[in-house]
Length: 130
Image 1 (cartoon, one colour):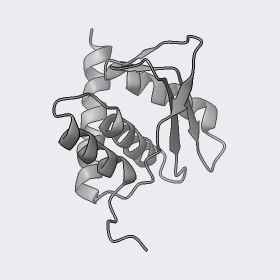
Image 2 (tube, helix red, strand yellow):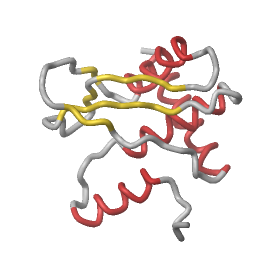
Image 3 (cartoon, helix red, strand yellow):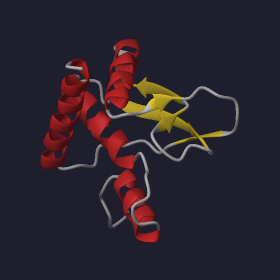
Image 4 (tube, helix red, strand yellow):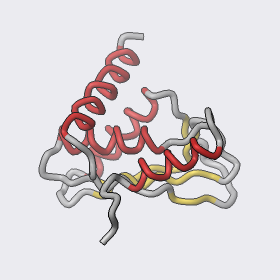
């Protein structure tokens, strides 16, 4: 059993930033949107599947899917896409080799979940007011 019980994306982000300070990675956004979805749909245990092209260096994703344990998958994918767009992402459907970003498995504190919910709701509110 691993000693570090944090979300794998937090560990990846920490390592990336220690090697490349100031570099962009989608880890925090994937965690925040996952936590936000699971608070909006408490029985879903949603998991985001985000694909990126190897050439993506900023807020670009190739595809997005949500794997819930309930029937709400189609509407949750649309809602998750809206959240990514509110955070400034774009969908770049192009041919090329892609990779799947690791998923957030929800190993976060309640405080982190509340912060994530507020961050995503604020981004959506800002986008809708434009």
